[in-house]
Image 1 (cartoon, one colour):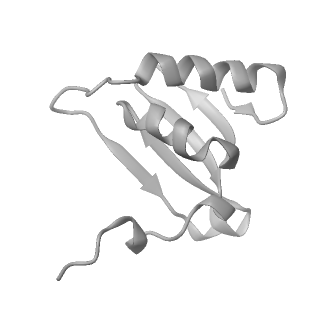
Image 2: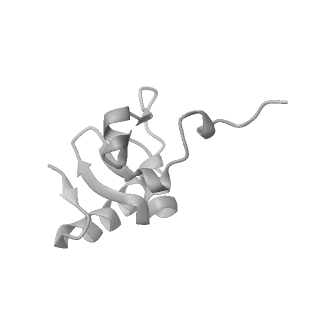
Length: 96
């Protein structure tokens, strides 16, 4: 169930997730992914999903850009404003 920015539960949910996922490395099947879908981007957001400490890192680093959060049983799904997202290729370092 999506919890949207501006609702009473939103900030409390982010605080709890940040605490619960801090330092959680995850097992060998742990994953994180960004889904940049053109239609979603046109609507002003990209999706981010993780089941490890990347949840806490995202909240710490980009809290102001989180538009909605869906804390599921297996991991956490975020809608992130495109204003806080560069692009897919820019998440990688430049090689020399």
